[in-house]
Amino acid sequence: MMKNSLSDRLQMFVRRATGRGRLNENDIEEMMREVRLALLEADVNFKIVKEFTKNVKEKALGETILKGLNPGQQVVKIVHEELKRIMGEETVGLNFASSGLTKIMTIGLQGSGKTTAIGKLGLWIRKNYKKKILFVAADIYRPAAINQLETIGKQLAIDVYKEDVKDARKIVKNGLNYAKENKYDVIIVDTAGRLTIDEDMMQELKDVKDILEPNDILLTVDAMMGQEAANVAKSFHDQIGATGVILTKLDGDTRGGAALSVREVANIPIKFASSGEKMDTIEVFHPDRMASRILGMGDVLTLIEEVTSNIDEDEAKSLMEKMMSDSYNYLDLQKQFKMIKRMGSITKLLGFIPGLGKMKDAISQVDEKQFDKINVIIQSMTEDERKYPELIDKSARRRDRIAKGAGVQVADVNRLREMLEQQKKLMKQMSKMDEKDFEKISRNPNALQPQVKPKKGKGKGKGNFRF
Image 1 (cartoon, rainbow, N blue to C red):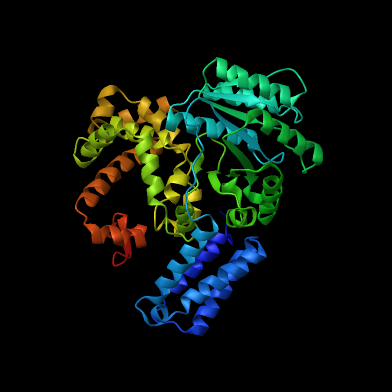
Image 2 (tube, rainbow, N blue to C red):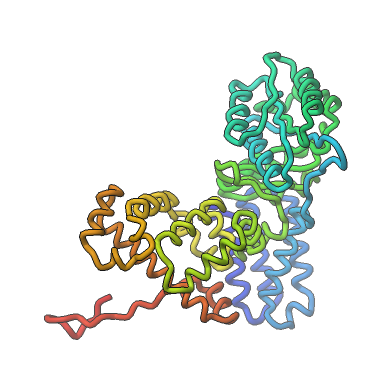
Protein backbone atom coordinates (compact mmCIF):
# COMPACT_ATOMS: atom_id res chain seq x y z
CA MET A 1 0.00 0.00 0.00
CA MET A 2 1.11 3.53 -0.71
CA LYS A 3 1.67 6.50 1.59
CA ASN A 4 -1.41 7.94 3.32
CA SER A 5 -3.07 4.53 3.02
CA LEU A 6 -5.13 3.00 5.79
CA SER A 7 -2.14 0.95 6.90
CA ASP A 8 0.18 3.98 7.13
CA ARG A 9 -2.34 6.06 9.11
CA LEU A 10 -3.17 3.30 11.58
CA GLN A 11 0.50 2.41 12.07
CA MET A 12 1.13 6.04 13.00
CA PHE A 13 -1.68 5.70 15.55
CA VAL A 14 -0.07 2.51 16.93
CA ARG A 15 3.29 4.23 17.40
CA ARG A 16 1.70 7.17 19.24
CA ALA A 17 -0.58 5.00 21.38
CA THR A 18 2.09 2.53 22.52
CA GLY A 19 4.30 5.44 23.61
CA ARG A 20 1.70 6.62 26.16
CA GLY A 21 2.33 5.53 29.75
CA ARG A 22 -0.96 7.03 30.98
CA LEU A 23 -4.26 7.83 29.30
CA ASN A 24 -7.32 9.90 30.14
CA GLU A 25 -10.66 10.39 28.38
CA ASN A 26 -9.34 13.27 26.25
CA ASP A 27 -6.46 11.07 25.05
CA ILE A 28 -8.91 8.33 24.00
CA GLU A 29 -11.08 10.91 22.21
CA GLU A 30 -8.01 12.24 20.34
CA MET A 31 -6.98 8.70 19.36
CA MET A 32 -10.47 7.93 18.07
CA ARG A 33 -10.41 11.07 15.92
CA GLU A 34 -7.19 9.78 14.28
CA VAL A 35 -8.68 6.32 13.72
CA ARG A 36 -11.96 7.77 12.39
CA LEU A 37 -10.06 9.96 9.90
CA ALA A 38 -7.88 7.03 8.78
CA LEU A 39 -10.93 4.84 8.12
CA LEU A 40 -12.90 7.54 6.29
CA GLU A 41 -9.89 8.40 4.09
CA ALA A 42 -9.59 4.68 3.33
CA ASP A 43 -13.14 4.84 1.90
CA VAL A 44 -14.60 2.57 4.58
CA ASN A 45 -18.40 2.68 4.82
CA PHE A 46 -19.49 5.55 7.13
CA LYS A 47 -21.80 3.37 9.28
CA ILE A 48 -18.94 0.93 9.88
CA VAL A 49 -16.60 3.78 10.87
CA LYS A 50 -19.18 5.11 13.32
CA GLU A 51 -19.78 1.70 14.91
CA PHE A 52 -16.06 0.87 14.95
CA THR A 53 -14.99 4.03 16.82
CA LYS A 54 -17.98 3.74 19.21
CA ASN A 55 -17.08 0.15 20.16
CA VAL A 56 -13.36 0.91 20.59
CA LYS A 57 -14.08 4.02 22.68
CA GLU A 58 -16.48 2.16 25.01
CA LYS A 59 -13.97 -0.61 25.67
CA ALA A 60 -11.01 1.80 25.96
CA LEU A 61 -12.74 3.94 28.62
CA GLY A 62 -12.96 1.00 31.03
CA GLU A 63 -11.23 1.30 34.41
CA THR A 64 -8.80 -1.54 33.67
CA ILE A 65 -7.50 0.25 30.57
CA LEU A 66 -7.16 3.78 31.95
CA LYS A 67 -5.56 2.71 35.24
CA GLY A 68 -3.77 -0.43 34.07
CA LEU A 69 -0.20 -0.98 32.89
CA ASN A 70 0.62 -0.06 29.27
CA PRO A 71 -2.80 1.49 28.53
CA GLY A 72 -1.69 2.55 25.03
CA GLN A 73 -0.85 -1.05 24.11
CA GLN A 74 -4.21 -2.19 25.43
CA VAL A 75 -6.01 0.36 23.23
CA VAL A 76 -4.05 -0.97 20.23
CA LYS A 77 -5.18 -4.48 21.18
CA ILE A 78 -8.83 -3.30 21.25
CA VAL A 79 -8.42 -1.70 17.79
CA HIS A 80 -6.88 -4.97 16.52
CA GLU A 81 -9.81 -7.00 17.90
CA GLU A 82 -12.36 -4.63 16.38
CA LEU A 83 -10.62 -4.74 12.96
CA LYS A 84 -10.71 -8.53 13.15
CA ARG A 85 -14.42 -8.53 14.08
CA ILE A 86 -15.34 -6.30 11.12
CA MET A 87 -13.45 -8.51 8.67
CA GLY A 88 -15.18 -11.67 9.84
CA GLU A 89 -13.70 -12.94 13.12
CA GLU A 90 -13.10 -16.49 11.81
CA THR A 91 -11.32 -17.87 8.73
CA VAL A 92 -13.82 -19.48 6.30
CA GLY A 93 -12.56 -22.14 3.88
CA LEU A 94 -13.93 -23.67 0.68
CA ASN A 95 -17.03 -25.89 0.79
CA PHE A 96 -15.73 -29.16 -0.68
CA ALA A 97 -18.24 -31.88 -1.51
CA SER A 98 -18.15 -34.77 0.98
CA SER A 99 -17.89 -37.13 -2.02
CA GLY A 100 -17.75 -36.82 -5.79
CA LEU A 101 -17.39 -33.60 -7.75
CA THR A 102 -16.94 -30.20 -6.02
CA LYS A 103 -18.61 -27.45 -8.07
CA ILE A 104 -17.46 -23.83 -7.77
CA MET A 105 -19.21 -20.98 -9.55
CA THR A 106 -17.46 -17.60 -9.88
CA ILE A 107 -19.35 -14.34 -10.34
CA GLY A 108 -18.39 -10.65 -10.51
CA LEU A 109 -18.32 -7.47 -12.54
CA GLN A 110 -16.20 -7.20 -15.68
CA GLY A 111 -12.71 -5.97 -14.78
CA SER A 112 -12.78 -7.38 -11.24
CA GLY A 113 -10.04 -9.90 -12.12
CA LYS A 114 -12.40 -12.90 -12.11
CA THR A 115 -10.74 -15.01 -14.83
CA THR A 116 -7.25 -14.49 -13.38
CA ALA A 117 -8.61 -15.30 -9.90
CA ILE A 118 -9.97 -18.61 -11.27
CA GLY A 119 -6.46 -19.54 -12.43
CA LYS A 120 -4.97 -18.64 -9.05
CA LEU A 121 -7.69 -20.55 -7.19
CA GLY A 122 -7.22 -23.63 -9.38
CA LEU A 123 -3.48 -23.65 -8.74
CA TRP A 124 -4.05 -23.15 -4.98
CA ILE A 125 -6.53 -26.09 -4.79
CA ARG A 126 -4.24 -28.40 -6.75
CA LYS A 127 -1.21 -27.46 -4.66
CA ASN A 128 -2.96 -27.81 -1.29
CA TYR A 129 -5.45 -30.62 -1.95
CA LYS A 130 -3.94 -32.50 -4.94
CA LYS A 131 -7.26 -32.36 -6.83
CA LYS A 132 -7.87 -32.88 -10.57
CA ILE A 133 -9.43 -29.61 -11.78
CA LEU A 134 -11.47 -28.54 -14.80
CA PHE A 135 -12.13 -24.92 -15.79
CA VAL A 136 -15.37 -24.23 -17.69
CA ALA A 137 -15.36 -21.17 -19.98
CA ALA A 138 -18.93 -19.81 -19.76
CA ASP A 139 -18.17 -16.08 -20.09
CA ILE A 140 -19.63 -15.71 -23.60
CA TYR A 141 -19.86 -11.90 -23.73
CA ARG A 142 -16.44 -10.47 -22.94
CA PRO A 143 -14.11 -10.51 -25.97
CA ALA A 144 -11.16 -12.87 -25.48
CA ALA A 145 -12.46 -14.18 -22.10
CA ILE A 146 -12.37 -17.80 -23.33
CA ASN A 147 -8.91 -17.30 -24.86
CA GLN A 148 -7.66 -15.82 -21.58
CA LEU A 149 -8.93 -18.83 -19.60
CA GLU A 150 -7.37 -21.22 -22.14
CA THR A 151 -4.02 -19.43 -21.89
CA ILE A 152 -4.14 -19.63 -18.08
CA GLY A 153 -5.13 -23.32 -18.30
CA LYS A 154 -2.14 -24.12 -20.55
CA GLN A 155 0.20 -22.18 -18.28
CA LEU A 156 -0.96 -24.17 -15.23
CA ALA A 157 -1.55 -27.51 -17.02
CA ILE A 158 -5.25 -27.40 -16.02
CA ASP A 159 -7.87 -28.55 -18.56
CA VAL A 160 -10.41 -26.06 -19.95
CA TYR A 161 -13.85 -27.03 -21.26
CA LYS A 162 -15.27 -24.70 -23.95
CA GLU A 163 -17.86 -24.71 -26.72
CA ASP A 164 -18.32 -22.46 -29.74
CA VAL A 165 -21.89 -21.50 -28.78
CA LYS A 166 -23.46 -18.36 -27.30
CA ASP A 167 -25.43 -20.17 -24.59
CA ALA A 168 -23.82 -20.21 -21.13
CA ARG A 169 -26.50 -22.59 -19.80
CA LYS A 170 -25.70 -25.22 -22.43
CA ILE A 171 -21.92 -24.85 -21.89
CA VAL A 172 -22.27 -25.33 -18.11
CA LYS A 173 -24.62 -28.34 -18.49
CA ASN A 174 -22.31 -30.10 -20.97
CA GLY A 175 -19.20 -29.11 -19.02
CA LEU A 176 -20.68 -30.61 -15.86
CA ASN A 177 -21.39 -33.91 -17.64
CA TYR A 178 -17.89 -33.90 -19.14
CA ALA A 179 -16.35 -33.39 -15.65
CA LYS A 180 -18.33 -36.31 -14.20
CA GLU A 181 -17.53 -38.65 -17.12
CA ASN A 182 -13.79 -37.87 -16.92
CA LYS A 183 -13.65 -38.12 -13.12
CA TYR A 184 -12.53 -34.59 -12.26
CA ASP A 185 -12.50 -33.67 -8.56
CA VAL A 186 -13.26 -29.94 -8.90
CA ILE A 187 -15.03 -27.90 -11.58
CA ILE A 188 -14.63 -24.09 -11.58
CA VAL A 189 -17.05 -22.19 -13.82
CA ASP A 190 -16.15 -18.75 -15.22
CA THR A 191 -19.44 -16.89 -15.71
CA ALA A 192 -20.12 -13.64 -17.56
CA GLY A 193 -19.29 -10.31 -15.99
CA ARG A 194 -20.78 -6.97 -17.04
CA LEU A 195 -19.72 -3.38 -16.54
CA THR A 196 -22.89 -2.89 -14.48
CA ILE A 197 -25.36 -5.23 -12.85
CA ASP A 198 -28.42 -5.78 -15.10
CA GLU A 199 -31.53 -7.99 -15.11
CA ASP A 200 -30.44 -10.25 -18.00
CA MET A 201 -27.09 -10.92 -16.39
CA MET A 202 -28.68 -11.87 -13.06
CA GLN A 203 -31.21 -14.19 -14.73
CA GLU A 204 -28.45 -16.00 -16.61
CA LEU A 205 -26.46 -16.42 -13.37
CA LYS A 206 -29.56 -17.78 -11.58
CA ASP A 207 -30.07 -20.31 -14.41
CA VAL A 208 -26.41 -21.38 -14.29
CA LYS A 209 -26.70 -21.76 -10.51
CA ASP A 210 -29.76 -24.03 -10.91
CA ILE A 211 -27.94 -26.22 -13.46
CA LEU A 212 -24.64 -26.41 -11.58
CA GLU A 213 -25.97 -26.64 -7.98
CA PRO A 214 -22.59 -25.29 -6.75
CA ASN A 215 -20.93 -26.08 -3.42
CA ASP A 216 -19.46 -22.56 -3.47
CA ILE A 217 -20.44 -19.34 -5.24
CA LEU A 218 -17.39 -17.08 -5.08
CA LEU A 219 -17.78 -13.40 -5.87
CA THR A 220 -14.64 -11.59 -7.10
CA VAL A 221 -14.46 -8.02 -5.82
CA ASP A 222 -11.90 -5.41 -6.89
CA ALA A 223 -10.33 -4.01 -3.69
CA MET A 224 -9.57 -0.73 -5.46
CA MET A 225 -13.30 0.06 -5.54
CA GLY A 226 -13.25 0.88 -1.80
CA GLN A 227 -16.68 0.89 -0.15
CA GLU A 228 -18.39 0.63 -3.56
CA ALA A 229 -17.02 -2.93 -3.59
CA ALA A 230 -19.23 -3.66 -0.59
CA ASN A 231 -22.33 -2.32 -2.38
CA VAL A 232 -21.58 -4.47 -5.45
CA ALA A 233 -21.07 -7.51 -3.20
CA LYS A 234 -24.40 -6.88 -1.44
CA SER A 235 -26.26 -6.57 -4.74
CA PHE A 236 -24.86 -9.87 -6.05
CA HIS A 237 -25.44 -11.63 -2.74
CA ASP A 238 -29.06 -10.45 -2.42
CA GLN A 239 -29.92 -11.81 -5.88
CA ILE A 240 -27.65 -14.85 -6.33
CA GLY A 241 -26.59 -15.84 -2.81
CA ALA A 242 -22.77 -15.78 -2.75
CA THR A 243 -21.00 -18.04 -0.23
CA GLY A 244 -17.70 -16.17 -0.23
CA VAL A 245 -15.61 -13.35 -1.66
CA ILE A 246 -12.25 -13.33 -3.45
CA LEU A 247 -10.81 -9.87 -2.84
CA THR A 248 -8.61 -9.07 -5.87
CA LYS A 249 -5.97 -6.38 -6.58
CA LEU A 250 -5.31 -5.93 -2.86
CA ASP A 251 -1.73 -4.81 -3.62
CA GLY A 252 -2.88 -1.86 -5.74
CA ASP A 253 -5.29 -0.50 -3.14
CA THR A 254 -4.09 2.89 -1.88
CA ARG A 255 -6.99 3.18 0.54
CA GLY A 256 -7.82 -0.32 1.76
CA GLY A 257 -11.51 0.25 2.54
CA ALA A 258 -12.85 -2.80 0.69
CA ALA A 259 -11.50 -5.37 3.15
CA LEU A 260 -13.16 -3.50 6.02
CA SER A 261 -16.51 -2.90 4.29
CA VAL A 262 -17.36 -6.05 2.32
CA ARG A 263 -17.92 -8.47 5.20
CA GLU A 264 -19.94 -6.06 7.32
CA VAL A 265 -22.11 -4.53 4.56
CA ALA A 266 -22.74 -7.58 2.34
CA ASN A 267 -22.62 -10.19 5.13
CA ILE A 268 -20.46 -12.56 3.04
CA PRO A 269 -17.16 -13.97 4.37
CA ILE A 270 -13.97 -13.00 2.53
CA LYS A 271 -12.45 -16.40 1.71
CA PHE A 272 -9.40 -15.40 -0.37
CA ALA A 273 -7.25 -12.34 -0.98
CA SER A 274 -5.33 -11.97 -4.22
CA SER A 275 -2.50 -9.59 -5.09
CA GLY A 276 0.02 -9.29 -7.90
CA GLU A 277 0.08 -10.77 -11.40
CA LYS A 278 1.72 -14.12 -10.63
CA MET A 279 -0.51 -17.18 -10.35
CA ASP A 280 0.73 -18.06 -6.85
CA THR A 281 -0.35 -14.71 -5.36
CA ILE A 282 -3.56 -15.86 -3.70
CA GLU A 283 -3.96 -16.74 -0.04
CA VAL A 284 -6.66 -17.73 2.41
CA PHE A 285 -8.08 -14.63 4.10
CA HIS A 286 -7.42 -14.68 7.85
CA PRO A 287 -9.14 -11.67 9.52
CA ASP A 288 -6.79 -11.69 12.52
CA ARG A 289 -3.66 -11.79 10.35
CA MET A 290 -4.98 -9.06 8.04
CA ALA A 291 -5.69 -6.88 11.10
CA SER A 292 -2.08 -7.40 12.24
CA ARG A 293 -0.76 -6.42 8.80
CA ILE A 294 -2.91 -3.29 8.65
CA LEU A 295 -1.51 -2.22 12.04
CA GLY A 296 2.08 -2.99 10.95
CA MET A 297 2.50 -5.95 13.31
CA GLY A 298 3.61 -8.34 10.57
CA ASP A 299 2.19 -11.78 9.82
CA VAL A 300 4.59 -14.45 10.98
CA LEU A 301 2.07 -17.32 10.68
CA THR A 302 1.53 -16.72 6.96
CA LEU A 303 5.30 -16.38 6.46
CA ILE A 304 5.85 -19.76 8.17
CA GLU A 305 3.13 -21.35 5.98
CA GLU A 306 4.73 -19.92 2.82
CA VAL A 307 8.12 -21.29 3.85
CA THR A 308 6.95 -24.77 4.90
CA SER A 309 4.79 -25.25 1.78
CA ASN A 310 7.63 -24.33 -0.61
CA ILE A 311 10.80 -25.54 1.07
CA ASP A 312 11.84 -29.07 1.95
CA GLU A 313 12.78 -29.26 5.66
CA ASP A 314 15.88 -31.46 5.16
CA GLU A 315 17.08 -29.25 2.30
CA ALA A 316 16.67 -26.12 4.47
CA LYS A 317 18.41 -27.75 7.46
CA SER A 318 21.35 -28.84 5.31
CA LEU A 319 21.70 -25.32 3.87
CA MET A 320 21.49 -23.73 7.33
CA GLU A 321 24.31 -25.97 8.58
CA LYS A 322 26.43 -24.94 5.59
CA MET A 323 25.70 -21.25 6.25
CA MET A 324 26.88 -21.63 9.83
CA SER A 325 30.15 -23.19 8.67
CA ASP A 326 33.11 -21.78 6.76
CA SER A 327 32.38 -24.07 3.80
CA TYR A 328 29.41 -21.95 2.57
CA ASN A 329 30.03 -21.27 -1.13
CA TYR A 330 28.48 -19.95 -4.36
CA LEU A 331 26.66 -23.23 -5.05
CA ASP A 332 24.96 -22.90 -1.64
CA LEU A 333 24.10 -19.25 -2.34
CA GLN A 334 22.53 -20.31 -5.63
CA LYS A 335 20.44 -22.96 -3.82
CA GLN A 336 19.34 -20.36 -1.28
CA PHE A 337 18.10 -17.99 -4.01
CA LYS A 338 16.22 -20.83 -5.75
CA MET A 339 14.45 -21.59 -2.45
CA ILE A 340 13.51 -17.94 -1.98
CA LYS A 341 12.18 -17.66 -5.56
CA ARG A 342 9.98 -20.72 -5.01
CA MET A 343 8.18 -18.79 -2.27
CA GLY A 344 7.16 -15.98 -4.64
CA SER A 345 7.61 -12.23 -4.35
CA ILE A 346 10.42 -11.10 -2.00
CA THR A 347 8.61 -7.83 -1.34
CA LYS A 348 5.52 -9.73 -0.20
CA LEU A 349 7.54 -12.05 2.07
CA LEU A 350 9.39 -9.16 3.71
CA GLY A 351 6.04 -7.50 4.42
CA PHE A 352 5.11 -10.43 6.70
CA ILE A 353 8.03 -9.75 9.05
CA PRO A 354 7.19 -7.74 12.20
CA GLY A 355 9.11 -4.48 12.40
CA LEU A 356 9.65 -4.16 8.65
CA GLY A 357 6.43 -2.19 8.15
CA LYS A 358 8.41 0.99 8.83
CA MET A 359 10.74 0.12 5.95
CA LYS A 360 7.99 -0.26 3.31
CA ASP A 361 9.54 2.20 0.87
CA ALA A 362 12.85 0.34 0.91
CA ILE A 363 11.09 -3.05 0.63
CA SER A 364 9.02 -1.90 -2.36
CA GLN A 365 12.24 -1.02 -4.20
CA VAL A 366 13.71 -4.53 -3.89
CA ASP A 367 14.71 -5.44 -7.48
CA GLU A 368 13.96 -9.13 -7.84
CA LYS A 369 15.73 -9.21 -11.23
CA GLN A 370 19.00 -8.96 -9.28
CA PHE A 371 18.59 -12.66 -8.41
CA ASP A 372 18.74 -13.51 -12.12
CA LYS A 373 21.85 -11.34 -12.54
CA ILE A 374 23.55 -13.09 -9.60
CA ASN A 375 22.65 -16.48 -11.08
CA VAL A 376 24.28 -15.53 -14.42
CA ILE A 377 27.48 -14.47 -12.61
CA ILE A 378 27.61 -17.77 -10.68
CA GLN A 379 26.97 -19.73 -13.90
CA SER A 380 30.03 -17.99 -15.44
CA MET A 381 32.29 -19.51 -12.76
CA THR A 382 34.03 -22.86 -13.07
CA GLU A 383 32.88 -25.72 -10.81
CA ASP A 384 35.96 -25.24 -8.59
CA GLU A 385 35.34 -21.48 -8.29
CA ARG A 386 31.77 -22.12 -7.13
CA LYS A 387 32.98 -24.61 -4.53
CA TYR A 388 36.02 -22.63 -3.36
CA PRO A 389 35.30 -18.84 -3.24
CA GLU A 390 38.86 -18.11 -2.15
CA LEU A 391 40.06 -18.90 -5.72
CA ILE A 392 38.16 -15.82 -6.96
CA ASP A 393 39.19 -13.71 -3.95
CA LYS A 394 42.87 -14.28 -4.76
CA SER A 395 42.76 -13.78 -8.53
CA ALA A 396 41.91 -10.52 -10.37
CA ARG A 397 42.26 -12.44 -13.65
CA ARG A 398 39.48 -14.87 -12.62
CA ARG A 399 37.21 -11.99 -11.59
CA ASP A 400 37.78 -10.29 -14.96
CA ARG A 401 37.00 -13.52 -16.87
CA ILE A 402 33.79 -14.16 -14.85
CA ALA A 403 32.59 -10.57 -15.44
CA LYS A 404 33.14 -10.84 -19.21
CA GLY A 405 31.40 -14.25 -19.32
CA ALA A 406 28.37 -12.88 -17.47
CA GLY A 407 28.28 -9.61 -19.41
CA VAL A 408 28.67 -7.53 -16.24
CA GLN A 409 31.26 -5.25 -14.63
CA VAL A 410 34.02 -6.56 -12.33
CA ALA A 411 32.40 -4.38 -9.65
CA ASP A 412 29.29 -6.63 -9.88
CA VAL A 413 31.43 -9.71 -9.25
CA ASN A 414 33.04 -7.96 -6.26
CA ARG A 415 29.58 -7.09 -4.87
CA LEU A 416 28.66 -10.77 -5.08
CA ARG A 417 31.83 -11.69 -3.17
CA GLU A 418 30.90 -9.18 -0.46
CA MET A 419 27.36 -10.60 -0.32
CA LEU A 420 28.69 -14.11 0.31
CA GLU A 421 30.89 -12.82 3.14
CA GLN A 422 28.01 -10.80 4.65
CA GLN A 423 25.80 -13.90 4.59
CA LYS A 424 28.41 -15.86 6.55
CA LYS A 425 28.89 -13.08 9.10
CA LEU A 426 25.15 -12.56 9.51
CA MET A 427 24.47 -16.25 10.17
CA LYS A 428 27.30 -16.46 12.70
CA GLN A 429 25.94 -13.34 14.41
CA MET A 430 22.40 -14.81 14.54
CA SER A 431 23.65 -18.16 15.89
CA LYS A 432 24.88 -16.36 19.03
CA MET A 433 21.63 -14.46 19.63
CA ASP A 434 19.02 -15.16 22.30
CA GLU A 435 15.30 -14.31 22.59
CA LYS A 436 15.96 -10.74 23.82
CA ASP A 437 18.21 -10.05 20.84
CA PHE A 438 15.50 -11.20 18.39
CA GLU A 439 12.95 -9.03 20.19
CA LYS A 440 15.30 -6.05 19.78
CA ILE A 441 15.59 -6.76 16.05
CA SER A 442 11.79 -6.93 15.62
CA ARG A 443 11.67 -3.35 16.96
CA ASN A 444 14.72 -2.18 15.03
CA PRO A 445 15.73 -4.38 12.05
CA ASN A 446 18.80 -2.15 11.47
CA ALA A 447 20.30 -3.62 14.67
CA LEU A 448 21.12 -6.72 12.62
CA GLN A 449 23.33 -4.76 10.21
CA PRO A 450 27.04 -5.41 10.73
CA GLN A 451 28.79 -2.50 12.40
CA VAL A 452 31.43 -0.87 10.21
CA LYS A 453 34.49 0.32 12.11
CA PRO A 454 35.75 3.77 11.20
CA LYS A 455 39.18 3.94 9.56
CA LYS A 456 41.71 6.62 10.33
CA GLY A 457 42.53 8.94 7.47
CA LYS A 458 46.09 9.43 6.25
CA GLY A 459 48.02 12.48 5.18
CA LYS A 460 46.35 15.90 5.24
CA GLY A 461 43.48 16.08 7.71
CA LYS A 462 44.48 12.71 9.24
CA GLY A 463 42.79 13.66 12.50
CA ASN A 464 39.42 13.13 10.78
CA PHE A 465 37.67 9.77 10.23
CA ARG A 466 36.22 8.29 7.11
CA PHE A 467 34.05 5.20 6.56
